[in-house]
Image (cartoon, rainbow over the protein chains, first blue to last red):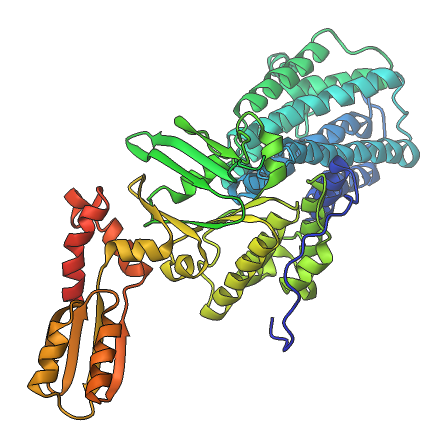
Length: 264
Length: 328
């Protein structure tokens, strides 16, 4: 206000809102997500690069006996799909939401007619969309670059992806709900990520796990998820426990988050 | 709606484990006024406005905004109430224009942002991310966001804390403009100069209670009933003149320090003194009048040294009155 002329006093002229509420929140969150490209890097780029690197190693496309007749690339496609969901739901989203709470962003928003739950909705929407995009890219790259066949039971595959996403985002939301601050959210998210990815078979594919480990893995969200993805890809409806396990995680953690989410 | 108050707080109480933050706080804010809530840190000012804005649930009592209950009529209250929070925050990378866009979308009938941003001096910073804004600009953005929904009542919490004197003065004229635009203002502050300059009425909060509620002027007069006049007569006062001055009904005490006269008396003592001096043809040099301001009233009202008296408000005032004179 260094100009010589006094500016006109405050006037409050009404106008029509430019855009619907959810789309405006999602737009804003998307902008912020793209400005912090870590999520995009780890959730989309990294698994795809990993797939390409893996597929380029000689021998990984050969079908062998030690992976239940699958090639290494084939075995890793569901694992990398799980990786992208876990990365976005457990590593990217919780610190973002905990940071919003820590800085008072949610508190500030809750003084407007906007329900702050819309921010959660937008966050899940964006992270979920990126994970879905990554799944599509992984599936297509695997198909056209490395000759891995597309899921033979597409409907079961889609149901599995949706249920896995719901379970992981419910857990991620729960971490955001109870974590005291960004650091805790980061730490808890990372621990959950590595444990989940272990049972998903990132370091040791499920086919090579001892029976006990595999049975434990079937009770974890990503153990169940990767198993179901494999089943759907092979062309049959996933084995008994996978869907109930995934749905259970989604339900329990979804309800717990709704119950315990703190806005400030 | 004609008689509905902008804000009505009735018997508000709130405790956290081990301490009670608000004890039976009641006040009303009339439509169109600037109402100040002052008090020392921890007096319960912020908790009070948090209850009014529906961010916090009181243990007892009620709050109303234009007759609406912030707890059961959350959306209705948020449509008429703008809030500027003490520690308000936006995502670091959100730009000014985007914040305005987002908060506009939160409201059913937002205001035209252009003139508001120009007046607040934000129009040159539309593309600046929140993290890179200076304290003053953040404060102004926060005001803009509080006003963007065309509220009828606005809560401004510690608006000028951390601003330099120039920015503070600019903000004061802004607050007056907000009121002139038809918005009732509930102002939380610990700057008495700010409350005295802006507020039509002030509630003094101390230890979770309202210890006084009145116009700034009345608070000052209620608490401190004296004025001190100092001057140096160009020609020495004769004993008769001195007797005339001392005989004035408003004068309580007259002392001479070297060639300077110090007179303590009632709030209108200056009138009497100048009349006597004029009649005698004495010119008063370096004439200085010390009137107590809201700072003094505030200190007297919230003084915790005299804790047995401070809670009874005006009784305490007479005690501290004397002390304050001594201190001056």
